[in-house]
Image (cartoon, rainbow, N blue to C red; front, side):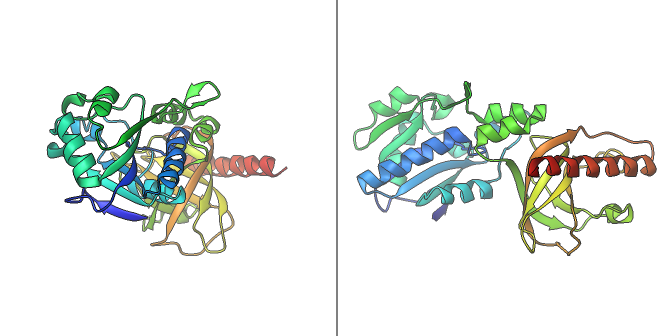
Length: 307
Protein backbone atom coordinates (compact mmCIF):
# COMPACT_ATOMS: atom_id res chain seq x y z
CA UNK A 1 0.00 0.00 0.00
CA UNK A 2 1.33 3.39 -0.98
CA UNK A 3 1.08 5.83 1.92
CA UNK A 4 0.76 9.62 1.56
CA UNK A 5 1.34 11.61 4.75
CA UNK A 6 -0.57 14.69 3.70
CA UNK A 7 -2.12 15.49 0.35
CA UNK A 8 -0.01 15.42 -2.85
CA UNK A 9 0.43 18.62 -4.84
CA UNK A 10 -1.41 17.08 -7.79
CA UNK A 11 -2.92 13.76 -8.81
CA UNK A 12 -0.74 11.28 -10.67
CA UNK A 13 -3.53 8.96 -11.89
CA UNK A 14 -7.29 8.47 -11.44
CA UNK A 15 -8.40 6.47 -8.39
CA UNK A 16 -11.45 4.90 -6.81
CA UNK A 17 -11.77 6.52 -3.40
CA UNK A 18 -13.59 6.28 -0.11
CA UNK A 19 -13.43 8.98 2.56
CA UNK A 20 -13.84 8.86 6.32
CA UNK A 21 -12.26 8.80 9.76
CA UNK A 22 -12.55 4.99 9.94
CA UNK A 23 -12.03 5.03 13.71
CA UNK A 24 -11.91 1.40 14.78
CA UNK A 25 -12.46 0.11 11.23
CA UNK A 26 -15.67 -1.57 12.38
CA UNK A 27 -17.96 -3.74 10.24
CA UNK A 28 -19.60 -0.72 8.61
CA UNK A 29 -16.17 0.52 7.53
CA UNK A 30 -15.23 -2.97 6.41
CA UNK A 31 -18.27 -3.09 4.13
CA UNK A 32 -17.11 0.19 2.57
CA UNK A 33 -13.59 -1.16 2.05
CA UNK A 34 -14.96 -4.32 0.46
CA UNK A 35 -17.18 -2.29 -1.90
CA UNK A 36 -14.22 -0.03 -2.71
CA UNK A 37 -12.18 -3.05 -3.72
CA UNK A 38 -14.95 -4.36 -5.98
CA UNK A 39 -15.42 -1.02 -7.73
CA UNK A 40 -11.70 -0.45 -8.16
CA UNK A 41 -11.33 -3.86 -9.79
CA UNK A 42 -14.32 -3.29 -12.08
CA UNK A 43 -13.07 0.15 -13.12
CA UNK A 44 -9.43 -0.94 -13.26
CA UNK A 45 -8.41 1.85 -10.91
CA UNK A 46 -6.21 1.88 -7.80
CA UNK A 47 -8.30 1.64 -4.63
CA UNK A 48 -7.66 4.56 -2.28
CA UNK A 49 -8.71 5.70 1.18
CA UNK A 50 -8.63 9.27 2.44
CA UNK A 51 -8.62 9.58 6.21
CA UNK A 52 -7.72 12.31 8.70
CA UNK A 53 -5.27 12.87 11.53
CA UNK A 54 -6.13 14.23 13.97
CA UNK A 55 -9.83 13.35 14.01
CA UNK A 56 -11.78 16.53 13.13
CA UNK A 57 -13.51 16.47 16.51
CA UNK A 58 -10.08 16.50 18.19
CA UNK A 59 -9.21 19.60 16.18
CA UNK A 60 -12.39 21.55 16.93
CA UNK A 61 -12.94 20.46 20.56
CA UNK A 62 -9.94 18.53 21.91
CA UNK A 63 -11.29 18.37 25.48
CA UNK A 64 -14.66 17.01 24.36
CA UNK A 65 -13.53 14.66 21.60
CA UNK A 66 -14.34 10.97 22.12
CA UNK A 67 -11.46 8.57 22.78
CA UNK A 68 -9.92 6.99 19.73
CA UNK A 69 -10.67 3.36 19.04
CA UNK A 70 -7.56 2.86 16.93
CA UNK A 71 -4.25 4.51 16.25
CA UNK A 72 -3.40 5.66 12.74
CA UNK A 73 -0.94 2.78 12.47
CA UNK A 74 -3.61 0.22 13.34
CA UNK A 75 -5.96 1.75 10.77
CA UNK A 76 -3.28 1.53 8.10
CA UNK A 77 -2.61 -2.11 8.92
CA UNK A 78 -6.32 -2.89 8.51
CA UNK A 79 -6.53 -0.93 5.24
CA UNK A 80 -3.61 -2.97 3.94
CA UNK A 81 -5.32 -6.21 5.00
CA UNK A 82 -8.33 -5.20 2.87
CA UNK A 83 -6.12 -4.74 -0.17
CA UNK A 84 -6.22 -0.94 -0.34
CA UNK A 85 -3.67 0.29 -2.90
CA UNK A 86 -3.01 3.73 -1.44
CA UNK A 87 -3.94 5.77 1.58
CA UNK A 88 -3.97 9.55 2.00
CA UNK A 89 -3.63 10.60 5.64
CA UNK A 90 -4.72 14.23 5.42
CA UNK A 91 -3.67 16.45 8.31
CA UNK A 92 -6.83 18.04 9.64
CA UNK A 93 -5.75 21.58 10.44
CA UNK A 94 -7.09 25.12 10.09
CA UNK A 95 -6.33 25.19 6.36
CA UNK A 96 -8.24 22.01 5.61
CA UNK A 97 -11.05 22.91 8.03
CA UNK A 98 -11.45 26.28 6.31
CA UNK A 99 -11.92 24.91 2.80
CA UNK A 100 -15.37 25.51 1.34
CA UNK A 101 -17.28 22.48 0.10
CA UNK A 102 -16.62 23.58 -3.48
CA UNK A 103 -12.89 23.91 -2.86
CA UNK A 104 -12.72 20.54 -1.16
CA UNK A 105 -14.19 18.86 -4.23
CA UNK A 106 -12.29 20.84 -6.86
CA UNK A 107 -8.90 21.24 -5.15
CA UNK A 108 -8.64 18.12 -2.99
CA UNK A 109 -10.72 15.37 -4.57
CA UNK A 110 -10.21 16.26 -8.23
CA UNK A 111 -6.97 18.24 -8.28
CA UNK A 112 -4.83 16.51 -5.66
CA UNK A 113 -6.25 12.98 -5.57
CA UNK A 114 -7.73 12.50 -9.03
CA UNK A 115 -10.94 10.83 -7.96
CA UNK A 116 -12.86 9.06 -10.72
CA UNK A 117 -15.27 7.16 -8.43
CA UNK A 118 -16.04 7.91 -4.78
CA UNK A 119 -17.90 6.02 -2.07
CA UNK A 120 -19.23 7.82 1.02
CA UNK A 121 -21.65 7.11 3.83
CA UNK A 122 -25.20 8.43 3.59
CA UNK A 123 -24.44 10.91 6.40
CA UNK A 124 -21.24 12.25 4.80
CA UNK A 125 -20.55 15.96 5.47
CA UNK A 126 -17.59 18.02 4.33
CA UNK A 127 -16.29 21.54 3.81
CA UNK A 128 -16.19 24.57 6.10
CA UNK A 129 -18.87 24.34 8.78
CA UNK A 130 -19.88 20.91 7.42
CA UNK A 131 -21.75 22.80 4.70
CA UNK A 132 -21.37 20.09 2.07
CA UNK A 133 -23.44 16.93 1.97
CA UNK A 134 -24.23 14.15 -0.48
CA UNK A 135 -26.29 16.39 -2.76
CA UNK A 136 -23.46 18.95 -2.84
CA UNK A 137 -20.99 16.23 -3.78
CA UNK A 138 -23.20 14.92 -6.55
CA UNK A 139 -23.80 18.44 -7.89
CA UNK A 140 -20.03 18.85 -8.36
CA UNK A 141 -19.41 15.38 -9.75
CA UNK A 142 -18.69 16.38 -13.32
CA UNK A 143 -15.67 14.12 -13.77
CA UNK A 144 -16.40 11.37 -11.28
CA UNK A 145 -19.27 9.19 -10.09
CA UNK A 146 -20.64 9.03 -6.55
CA UNK A 147 -21.93 6.00 -4.68
CA UNK A 148 -23.32 5.84 -1.16
CA UNK A 149 -23.04 3.07 1.40
CA UNK A 150 -26.21 2.32 3.32
CA UNK A 151 -26.17 1.67 7.04
CA UNK A 152 -24.73 -1.66 8.14
CA UNK A 153 -26.52 -3.20 11.11
CA UNK A 154 -25.26 -5.85 13.50
CA UNK A 155 -28.09 -7.62 15.34
CA UNK A 156 -30.37 -4.66 14.69
CA UNK A 157 -27.90 -1.96 15.79
CA UNK A 158 -26.11 0.41 13.42
CA UNK A 159 -22.41 -0.39 13.23
CA UNK A 160 -20.68 2.81 14.26
CA UNK A 161 -17.67 4.01 16.22
CA UNK A 162 -20.06 5.42 18.83
CA UNK A 163 -21.74 2.04 19.28
CA UNK A 164 -18.36 0.39 19.76
CA UNK A 165 -17.33 2.98 22.36
CA UNK A 166 -20.61 2.51 24.22
CA UNK A 167 -20.04 -1.25 24.36
CA UNK A 168 -16.48 -0.76 25.65
CA UNK A 169 -17.61 1.65 28.34
CA UNK A 170 -20.17 -0.93 29.49
CA UNK A 171 -17.47 -3.60 29.53
CA UNK A 172 -19.42 -5.61 26.96
CA UNK A 173 -16.46 -7.02 25.07
CA UNK A 174 -18.61 -9.54 23.20
CA UNK A 175 -20.78 -6.76 21.77
CA UNK A 176 -17.78 -4.63 20.88
CA UNK A 177 -16.23 -7.60 19.11
CA UNK A 178 -19.44 -8.24 17.18
CA UNK A 179 -19.53 -4.62 15.95
CA UNK A 180 -15.83 -4.69 15.06
CA UNK A 181 -15.82 -8.14 13.52
CA UNK A 182 -12.83 -9.00 15.73
CA UNK A 183 -11.80 -8.58 19.39
CA UNK A 184 -11.06 -5.01 20.43
CA UNK A 185 -7.30 -4.51 20.63
CA UNK A 186 -4.61 -2.01 21.50
CA UNK A 187 -1.05 -2.17 20.21
CA UNK A 188 2.20 -0.53 21.22
CA UNK A 189 5.80 -1.02 22.29
CA UNK A 190 6.72 -2.44 25.66
CA UNK A 191 8.46 0.18 27.79
CA UNK A 192 10.42 0.09 31.04
CA UNK A 193 8.26 0.66 34.09
CA UNK A 194 8.83 0.93 37.81
CA UNK A 195 9.24 -2.87 38.13
CA UNK A 196 6.59 -2.88 40.88
CA UNK A 197 4.75 -5.80 39.30
CA UNK A 198 7.87 -7.96 39.43
CA UNK A 199 8.41 -7.05 43.09
CA UNK A 200 4.84 -8.08 43.82
CA UNK A 201 5.29 -11.41 42.02
CA UNK A 202 3.45 -10.47 38.83
CA UNK A 203 5.90 -9.06 36.25
CA UNK A 204 4.06 -7.01 33.66
CA UNK A 205 4.69 -5.76 30.15
CA UNK A 206 3.95 -2.03 30.26
CA UNK A 207 2.60 -0.38 27.13
CA UNK A 208 2.40 3.40 26.94
CA UNK A 209 -0.70 4.86 25.35
CA UNK A 210 -0.55 7.96 23.15
CA UNK A 211 -4.26 8.66 23.49
CA UNK A 212 -6.85 8.26 26.22
CA UNK A 213 -8.28 4.74 25.88
CA UNK A 214 -11.95 4.02 25.26
CA UNK A 215 -12.14 1.53 28.15
CA UNK A 216 -10.80 0.99 31.66
CA UNK A 217 -10.58 -1.90 34.05
CA UNK A 218 -9.12 -5.37 34.47
CA UNK A 219 -9.44 -7.80 31.56
CA UNK A 220 -8.70 -11.30 30.37
CA UNK A 221 -6.57 -10.76 27.26
CA UNK A 222 -4.72 -12.47 24.45
CA UNK A 223 -1.29 -11.07 23.62
CA UNK A 224 0.20 -11.28 20.11
CA UNK A 225 3.74 -10.53 18.97
CA UNK A 226 5.49 -12.60 21.64
CA UNK A 227 8.39 -14.96 20.97
CA UNK A 228 6.89 -18.40 20.50
CA UNK A 229 3.44 -17.16 19.57
CA UNK A 230 0.43 -15.60 21.26
CA UNK A 231 -0.42 -16.20 24.93
CA UNK A 232 -3.22 -15.52 27.36
CA UNK A 233 -2.95 -13.13 30.27
CA UNK A 234 -4.61 -10.56 32.45
CA UNK A 235 -4.33 -6.81 31.87
CA UNK A 236 -4.91 -3.67 33.85
CA UNK A 237 -5.84 -0.60 31.85
CA UNK A 238 -6.12 2.57 33.88
CA UNK A 239 -4.40 5.06 36.17
CA UNK A 240 -3.25 2.65 38.95
CA UNK A 241 -4.93 4.51 41.84
CA UNK A 242 -3.35 2.32 44.54
CA UNK A 243 0.26 3.09 43.56
CA UNK A 244 0.13 6.41 41.67
CA UNK A 245 -1.47 9.84 41.90
CA UNK A 246 -2.64 11.80 38.85
CA UNK A 247 -1.07 9.20 36.56
CA UNK A 248 -1.69 8.89 32.86
CA UNK A 249 -3.50 5.75 31.67
CA UNK A 250 -1.17 2.79 31.27
CA UNK A 251 -1.70 -0.72 29.92
CA UNK A 252 -0.03 -3.38 32.09
CA UNK A 253 -0.18 -7.02 30.99
CA UNK A 254 0.75 -10.07 33.03
CA UNK A 255 1.34 -12.85 30.49
CA UNK A 256 0.68 -16.33 31.80
CA UNK A 257 3.62 -18.76 31.96
CA UNK A 258 6.01 -16.37 30.22
CA UNK A 259 9.15 -14.65 31.49
CA UNK A 260 11.21 -13.55 28.47
CA UNK A 261 12.30 -9.89 28.11
CA UNK A 262 9.95 -7.85 25.95
CA UNK A 263 11.32 -4.31 26.18
CA UNK A 264 11.09 -2.54 22.85
CA UNK A 265 8.91 -5.19 21.22
CA UNK A 266 5.62 -4.20 19.62
CA UNK A 267 2.72 -6.29 20.89
CA UNK A 268 -1.00 -6.37 20.27
CA UNK A 269 -3.35 -6.96 23.20
CA UNK A 270 -6.84 -8.29 22.49
CA UNK A 271 -9.43 -7.59 25.19
CA UNK A 272 -11.68 -10.63 25.46
CA UNK A 273 -13.52 -10.33 28.78
CA UNK A 274 -13.85 -7.68 31.46
CA UNK A 275 -13.21 -9.01 34.96
CA UNK A 276 -13.91 -5.88 36.99
CA UNK A 277 -13.49 -2.12 37.24
CA UNK A 278 -10.26 -0.53 38.42
CA UNK A 279 -10.23 0.14 42.18
CA UNK A 280 -8.06 1.72 44.85
CA UNK A 281 -6.83 -0.55 47.66
CA UNK A 282 -5.62 0.53 51.13
CA UNK A 283 -2.23 -1.16 50.87
CA UNK A 284 -0.07 -3.31 48.61
CA UNK A 285 -0.99 -6.49 50.47
CA UNK A 286 -4.65 -5.96 49.56
CA UNK A 287 -3.67 -5.20 45.98
CA UNK A 288 -1.67 -8.43 45.71
CA UNK A 289 -4.62 -10.47 47.01
CA UNK A 290 -6.83 -8.91 44.35
CA UNK A 291 -4.26 -9.53 41.60
CA UNK A 292 -4.14 -13.21 42.60
CA UNK A 293 -7.94 -13.33 42.36
CA UNK A 294 -7.86 -11.60 38.95
CA UNK A 295 -5.30 -14.09 37.63
CA UNK A 296 -7.42 -16.99 38.88
CA UNK A 297 -10.56 -15.51 37.30
CA UNK A 298 -8.79 -14.96 33.98
CA UNK A 299 -7.39 -18.50 33.94
CA UNK A 300 -10.88 -19.83 34.68
CA UNK A 301 -12.29 -17.77 31.79
CA UNK A 302 -9.76 -19.23 29.34
CA UNK A 303 -10.30 -22.76 30.69
CA UNK A 304 -14.04 -22.42 30.03
CA UNK A 305 -13.37 -21.19 26.49
CA UNK A 306 -11.15 -24.19 25.81
CA UNK A 307 -13.65 -26.68 27.20
